[in-house]
Image (cartoon, rainbow, N blue to C red; front, side, top):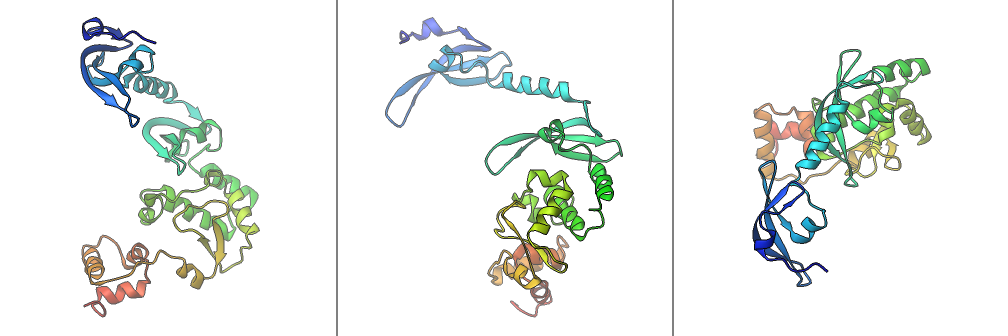
Length: 278
């Protein structure tokens, strides 16, 4: 057990990049135990409060800049590196999966000239090798390009991954994700859909609308059943006024408003034309 130190003994002492400046208010745990906390200045200039035990056992060696520096150094080694047809040009943050796991996102330039934002792990493990042009070539080669489900696959990716897509706010914007293997493999997605009993005229539907395009959460239904599974919102005068305001400002069209509020397009038309909720 460590001998209790006085502030005079520990003051100005250095632990990693941290120099002890003064003692702060002790931290109390739910069980009533209290730990000594010291205010420290990091070599980078930042100040941070750290428990004495963390300083002494080496758990905390900086204000966090060591980790940031390592990340920057790691990305510096990756920048301009080429994976398949993709060359990394920038780091743009992290993607958080439903499980809470995070993965770095990078911007890449494809040989065809297109830019793409992709998970670093996807290009490292080879599951993503291009902006999609390679997949199109492969799809053409294997006959998937002309399959009706190929356009479904492209639309699904656009809604969930393309921030410039008009419907992104309803899908990727609210956390609807895609099974990782399907993002770059149209064939695997199409084969899975066929195994679900896909027939011409049926619509792809998510069983739980709050979950993504994942194995076990997809089915094919007719248009009536698809409408029943949409997010339903009970309308009232307040929402009707909001719909008219949004529509008058030309933020969304009637079809997008229908998706946003979980009602039919004809209901939106009746509202904006003052036929109901006047």
